[in-house]
Length: 152
Image (cartoon, rainbow, N blue to C red):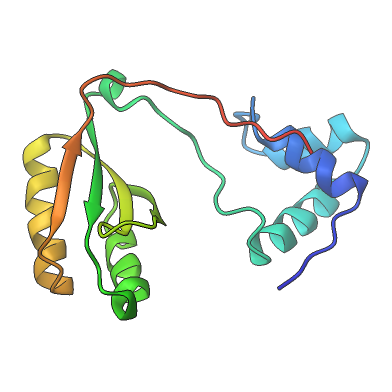
């Protein structure tokens, strides 16, 4: 689905990437800042989400600062099974995202959980559920956080 974006769409996208208002009506706050209505902002955000331009809106937390651990996982998935594998992986609450790579380990995903043991248990569950037995668990030994903000 192709979506044409106008100046207000781009302004909204720029605004919601950082400093999202922590209030019961965040889109009303954004609308007031941008000189439009809450209904207009909500309509545009919904359209951008439906079209796939916005994948998710939510907070990002540093796992270690809230008592969690994180790991990067890489799986060797037959090409015909990639979509089903991704759906299965995405059903686990600790998976933040996954992506394809040109490698024999072709599906990579991040996993966050209260402990490494929980992650290991979930990787076993994923393997059982999908039939994919080659899943590498690559725990973070040093974390580098980058700020991904896209200026539209």
